[in-house]
Length: 138
Image 1 (cartoon, rainbow, N blue to C red):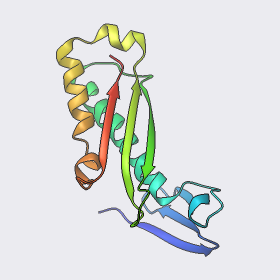
Image 2: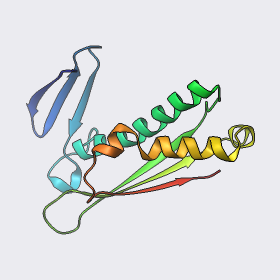
Image 3: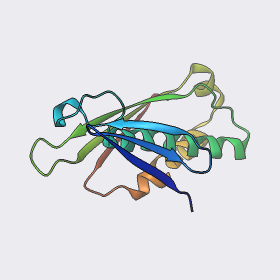
């Protein structure tokens, strides 16, 4: 079990502290929802969680198999519903794979890494109502 302590500071700002590491991050409501957009919004953190979980899980598979995927990056684009209730509707995840990584991996390795991304813990925790669009530039 991991504990995260959250303090509401007012003005739609929060401070979250990761108990095991004491790392602190700030959140703010987005500009389109009464905030100032001065930090990640809670739904931005959801998108961030998905992206970092996908690539971390891929890194675990790569480590177990002796593959070097250093330099892989990704971008997550978060889309909110246009009609109430307000929620994340779609997360588009686009991976950029360095040429070195693409050339060193065979088809089965690429398939295993993509499967790791699709089945990371955050992806499996999302409601089926959240569309996850995954693109890898193999």
